[in-house]
Figure (cartoon, helix red, strand yellow):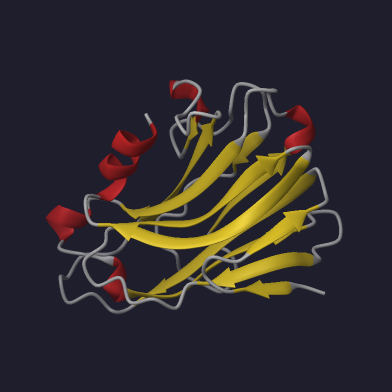
Length: 184
């Protein structure tokens, strides 16, 4: 049975292989421009910095060097039910230097399109077993991000030999660049 997390809650992840599903809906845009939300994954070491440029996984770099993180591709519209983008994780392949995997969703070209997460609703991150489709945990973001153009949905981190997920739900108004500055 799935565990529904609240912002700040943490939960152990006992399966080495799982899929991260990310979903959202957008309000009809008053800007007259369609929305394009993008998932980005930052694979980091103990210093909370990405291990290399190749450890920044997104629609133009779909797989981490060790093969532990694989982005399944960019969804340009976010239309329809279910997950809009998915990330496959295999912690058994993770380089020994990996201690954290952050999941960030950004609005592509948000400033030019005059868009922000206040125009996005029903956002969630879920972790599920790809073999059985059983949902392990889910976090529904309920905050109103009225000026933010990028939101860290959650992070997977290692404590000792155990991997955990934390429901983060924190946004930044400078888009993807804010997170690149933070984690690079």
